[in-house]
Length: 139
Image (tube, rainbow, N blue to C red):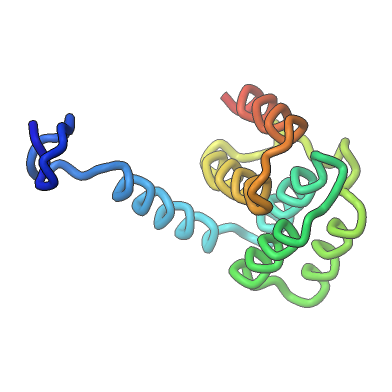
């Protein structure tokens, strides 16, 4: 098959590419995010902050990612203070238990964690390994 630019492609006319699939996944993740209750939102942010610290440093871009997520999730001031405390020092390791992530929220948690570790443009080996272990535990 030749596409409109004259290049070979594997898609057939009318098929959608990966960009549409990503957009649909983002819409679904946003829908799930808005449906999280208070405890689930805090759990999500605890995981996000823990993974932001995976390389033992918190970069400004990772902090900005967390700030955007805080505003999207609509935390009250006390919840926001709790999340910001995890930006000063990571949450205790024993409080970040992957087995407590509900199966229905697995994809949203992974997307948020992928977002925070990629926010600074560099995925450190420690971050990559931590995400790999998390994905294995959630499989």
